[in-house]
Length: 282
Ligand SMILES: C[S@@+](CC[C@H](N)C(=O)[O-])C[C@H]1O[C@@H](n2cnc3c(N)ncnc32)[C@H](O)[C@@H]1O
Image (cartoon, rainbow, N blue to C red):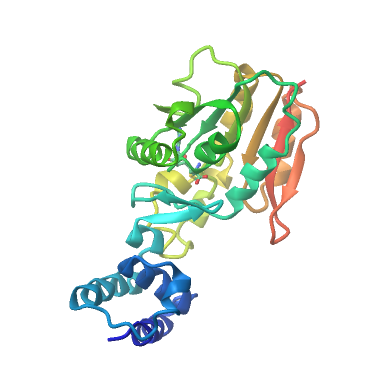
């Protein structure tokens, strides 16, 4: 089978099984099997697949038809133009989180002492910590309750040559961080309300529930983070959070009611949804 034929075959299979992006999925899987960039598939459309490549591709297609996320099948994903290793033990980073990193990079941090100190709560595969460490002169404390996630995050940090700037620590939110005061606290915590879990798409439910489930109303982690943040943040420090749909008002009120922050700033995502909230300590 040639590349073009393989792509067409898989696209038809995915369209029949109801995948949202049949062509894109076919390209991502075949490019991975062949070790090519997606665009290069089209420069080699008449190249024959070896029997091993074809067999591997068919296995990938079967897994995708069963709604396994592409990132788990190929073991990687892209974030801010860089490749990150992914395993089924970790949350798959979403494009909205790139916005969170971009907003942190826009903060007026020149008056803060170097290296900047940052806590990343619930680091997952480490996309936020690694992306910040690639740009800022900083020391980052990245925590997660999941040891598997921390192993993956550490591998990503080594791969991107930022491991010396990040300390990975297992534990429940701030619990493993004693007597620490930092310039920035960032988190994209689990925020799916319990009652929404059953209705999630099958492939989202393939991700670790611990990474998604935010309890009643999806606000439990925000409540804890906002309550504990003032103890861990220096004066003029920043709290930067990614938030879920319809959560901005309640989370904004939680921040204001601590009396420890100036008015929080909301940033919308490309779909016009309040997605990032940033507050500065007074
Ligand atoms: C939505 S994922 C975000 C992962 C990553 N920061 C990102 O943006 O792609 C939430 C992460 O929080 C972690 N987590 C869940 N409960 C936690 C807790 N009590 N303490 C620390 N981390 C927790 C999960 O294991 C998961 O990696």
